[in-house]
Image (cartoon, rainbow, N blue to C red; front, top):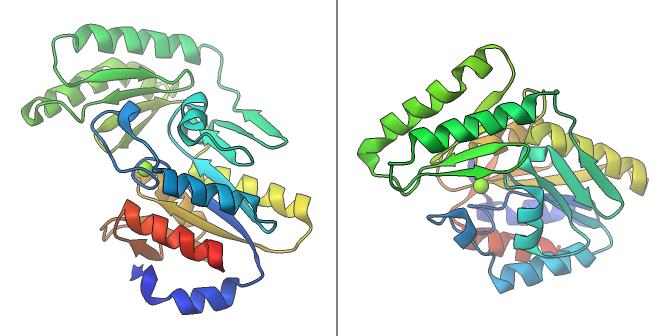
Length: 262
Ligand SMILES: [Mg+2]
């Protein structure tokens, strides 16, 4: 990976007067990672920047998040932006509304897993189950580190039957384990879908995608955009598929500012 601020001149040259589609993860990209997801906030400065970018004629913005759709919409709170929640299973924005169809019985299974997790982990501190309707997240950032293997074991015991019969999928994240629908869909697919849709709509020829994210789930997007546009990982990772990196959420803000000026 290359440090993006070393290549800005080149990027500016390549991107000038092009139609840009900016894909942004939320937590850890626009907001610092905090102990519980409800405490994460986007700074007013970054919101202003996003708002300015969303008003530009040749720029689109999509926020691609693992959060539930209603949650991410509220957190960002801007119009004229496409929101994709639940890792892409829900999409909503100007003239677009889409929810993935899940297999029958899937939501009942989520209810059962939720009940089991709550029961088995009721005595464990620093753990909570978040019901995102189309997915279920077990957060354990605040748990005692020694408890983590036990928490993971309980999670896997609760899901294993459904997992082996392909009724659910599992997605591990940063101090989080998630149950998601058993469908062939991820952040990479969402990005390609939105890009194709925008190219058909705008008739402005090739659109340049820019993807910024910090999660393992963002790797699916980095992969599909490998030979196209700009991929930026937030943080330090040797294993990321992104071409570039920035060091922090603060530098994401700086990068957005730069893109606004292109
Ligand atoms: Mg993130």
